[in-house]
Every structure is written in structure tokens, then in C-alpha cells.
Image (cartoon, rainbow, N blue to C red; front, top):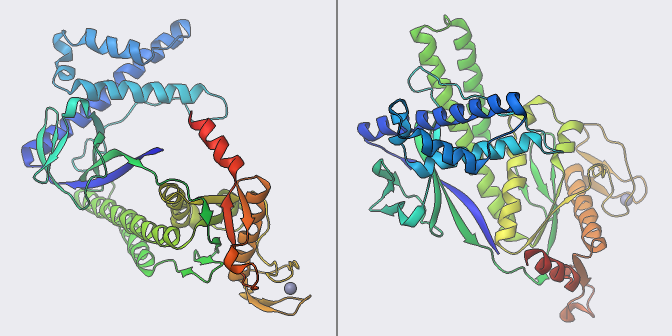
Length: 408
Ligand SMILES: [Zn+2]
């Protein structure tokens, strides 16, 4: 099974290339707005839309006209990608069960260094190559890039974007997943508490890093400074740029942290069980959790990493209670936010609040997976006589069969 992954690389374009990239970003935005206007006009007129094919041929028809020279100067495959994106956006807006709104026109940020346009080039007939730490992009040329990690496979597409004051490109590649592990040797539940610390049922602890807190303090300070400045003045723009840069730093720090933790827990365990964070946010966390969702990022990244490694990721049911359940006997307790430890009223075992929650998440996850027929619990031969507590699971034949059917 193959999975498409996205890797980001830093670009360092020359001034001429930078001008070209800005121009191309603006062109992609222009094409989006043009096609969207045309779609809106048609929809109002006779309730129809242009789909990808129609939009692509419309672009072709426009090219010979002088006033559309700006489309001619653009990479045609990249222009088609804009049409593809718009088609997806239109389809999403009209499909049931989706929350997406009708696509909007894209606005330009005229002030230099605040624009966030992007465009996506496609690797048709090997036109995008990485050689001598430079990436060749159609109609732009060879842009120096920092190849901090080797490519996993051939480049599929490249999206070039100016974000938080830096040029970057994100490259999609197809990566082969490892075959699903037939024998899974460990199951670990993870609890994420209100202090945003990840606690594993195997004793793993990862704290919400201090550097994020520091950066956030700095951000608050700058935001207060911005409020004091005259809106639109030079000094206002200066502060605005510093805020933009800091936002970039925070998001990079957060991503780095989440990648490290998710890699660590994926390597160390065969089955990962998490709570459904959507519900958790509503239940316990305050606003900061939504704005700064490091923990959501960890679950998101663990999900694809387990898939790559042929391991299992599972989220337990939406309203399954996990806090305050004794990990020894299952007795329920009502805890306030300040109770970090509790002693079970039934079996008198004193336990850590987060650890017991993680254990109960693991137990619920185990039951879920067995009930769904995804795994079967087995006792390895070496342990059949000893009373060792290590749990071993086998990917059930039933589940493997259905997976193949889906792929076919
Ligand atoms: Zn108990």
C-alpha cells in the first residue's frame, strides 16, 4: 500500500526568482478568482457549474487573447491545478455531511512581505528535479533549497509558498507502507490531560514544552505593542512583521515537538490508543487548547506514522469515560481538576490520575479492537505456563481479508 506524504523544504531564491515566485503566486490567485467568478455567474444564470475539464479548456481558450497574457506566462500545469482545487472546493461545498462553505475570492495583501499566495507545480515528464541542492520548477528555473532530508521517492507535486517571512516548498511523494505486522506485541493507551501532558499507560510522559510557553509570552507582549501603535503606520507594520515571524517560529517548534513525540511512541509500541480529542476539547479544555493544538497534532502524526510502520492506531469512542477509573478493579471515582492522585475506594490502591486514565484508555481500546474483529488476543508459547502479563495480539484473519478486499 502506498501513501502520499508531504515534506517541507526551505527555499532560498535569488531576488529575480523571488520576483517570479511572487508573480506566479499572484497569477494562481488571479486564475482562481477568474474561474470562480465565471462559476458564480453560471450558477446564478442557469444553476450549473464548470467542472475541471470545462475550466481547463476555458483557460486554453483565453490564452490567445492579449489581456490574458499573464496566464500565458504561467506554467500551464500549475494553472490546471488551480482549476482542480476549485473543482474540489465546489464539490465539497455541495456534498452532504461536509462543513465547507462556498469558495471565496482570494484577496491580495498589497503590503510587501505579508502576501500568502501559493502555486502548485506538477511533475509531468520529470520536469521537477532536485539536483545539486536546487529544485528546478517549470518557468522559474533552479531555485536553491535546503535538502535537510533525502527524498523518499519521486516528486509528485511541489507547492511553493511564502509563509511567515520565509519561502518554502512542500513536496508530495509516494511512500510505501510496511506490511501490516501480524503479531502485535504491545498495546499502550495515551491520556492527554488539561496541562497538555501526554501520559502513556506504560509510564511514558511527555510534558508540554517550556519553549512554547516562552514564545507565547513573547507573542502576547508583541500583540500588546501592536495595539499601542497607530494602525497602518510604519511602526505598526514593523511589529506586525515581527508577530508574523514569531507565529512561524511557534508553528515550527510545535510541529517539531509533535513529530519527535509521535515518532518516539510509534517506535516503542505496536498498538496506540488515544481518546477522541474533539470531544475532549469540548469537555475539559479551555480556549487555549483549540488555538494551540499540539496534542491534536501528536495524534494526527501518530496516525500516519503507525500506518507507515504497519502498526495499529485506534481512537476510543466519543463519550467513553477514562479519568477516575481504578486501573486495578475498574471502580469509578469523581475527581476534581486538582486531584492529581486518588486512592481507590474499593481496592485501596493509590494511583496517579493520568496514569490510571491512560491504563483505562488502553483497556477500552483493547476491548474495542477485539470486538471489531481487528485483533485477537493470543498467549505466546513461551508464556503459556508462566504468569507473565505481557499481552500479545494477532491481526485477525478476518480483518486482513477485508482490508485486501477494500484495496482491490
Ligand atoms: Zn480499585
